[in-house]
Amino acid sequence: MTPPLLSIQGLTKVYPGVVANKDVTFDIGEGEVHALLGENGAGKSTLVKAIYGLIRPNEGTMLWRGQPYAPNAPAQARATGVAMVFQHFSLFDAMDVAENVALGMDNPPPIRELAARITEVSNNYGLPLDPSRMVGDLSAGERQRVEIIRCLLQNPQLLIMDEPTSVLTPQEVEILFRTLRQLRAEGRSILYISHKLEEIRSLCENATVLRLGKVVGRADPRQESARSLAEMMVGQTLHTPSRPAAQPGKMLLQVTDLSVASPSAFGTSLKSVSLAVRAGEILGIGGVAGNGQDELLGALSGEIRANAEAVRMAGEPVGQFGPNARRAMGLLCAPEERLGHAAAPDMSLTENALLTGAWREKLVTRGFVNWGKARGFAEKVIERFDVRTPGPWVAARALSGGNLQKFVIGREILQRPSVLVVNQPTWGVDASAAASIRQALLDLAQAGAAVVVISQDLDEILEVADNFAALNGGKLSAPRPVQGLTMDQIGLMLGGAETGETDVAA
Image (tube, rainbow, N blue to C red):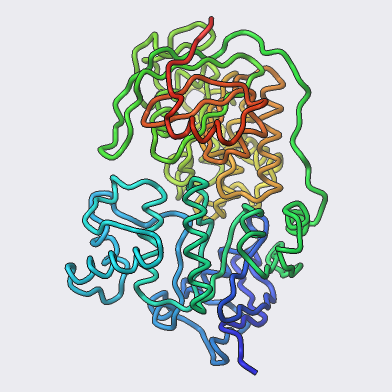
């Protein structure tokens, strides 16, 4: 009998105070697309790091086609036939595609030969790339192609993909899936991690479910519903976010003819953006990554200054105010990049709670930090948003991506903002945590706040928003009520077919 491509037997990994994996056992067959499912902090990242040679397990064994497999480093894993596409791209904007690919290879060929190979392989797999293009000029989908082609050039037999569709449009997802099915047809195997369960059902034939580091279930996703998979992950009935219908109140956020240059050479400048959000209202803003989302959040948070009259909060001009002044007035923001922008990686959760909560939570008195109060605020966020961590003393970088996202969003919501702007609020979080975050946003609006949700997840926007606007090339379309809006109409708006100035009523 032919052995599986990779067999994991009793794998256990323990960190101080945390059992990340405990007695994990499952197989990945040749030519199989296998899903690895679990809540944030369930142990998925630890497991794939062990497979890819980034960490060494404390116990257990791995077999590669029946032979012992224990990589000491990623280079050894790659030499065996394992490649990995990480959730966060590791590319240099100021270098071209070929140069970025070369940096990720152990023994790259001469750059001209490599460029020819990139063109050949990318075209063969339906992911065409120009090796001479600067990475900074690429869309999010094209950047992911660079990561995938870099892996495919090394002829892997097992491709690990961590949240590969989190920044892709529906059209880009379909192109990616065609490529993955082609790889499966060639006999290659894929270990696929995603919180988008409908994608799992469409692509994968087997799934292993982790909870608190242990295997708690196995399933054929094609025979399950997205809801049943989610409930298998969390071990309980999944909550569906809801809020009672209400009439919006007074105008809290008003943006009129906002034009600002992007601070990044590879960013997108905003062009005559106008929007209005009232108390109790949620405005959803959709768009393909790189169309001005970061710049819009920066202009609303105060990180990018604008004409004073371009941004008003409760009628007061705030366009020239910085982030601290806007926070004091009740305008809070949570950016997309959680590690490095929303949170300082090497600071503890207590220190990160202090960074944005100092003013509204009164954590500083006469220039002195009240560390007990700061720690209490961090503990409140951890408890309220179910952040899986040993405690508030843990550094932000030690948390899984989803748990850090819960901390960042919870930190802002618990400061009771009158206006909250969030970019990608549920990026990389599991179904249960996403439902919890969305319910918290709905509750915040129900309590009288104005909320702006910038997201590439159209299902998320349709679930929480009252009105929808599309951001394309730095321009914002006129908002339309979410009720009755079709995906075809949204697609046209995302493509810029219906962009125009927004009617802003006082």
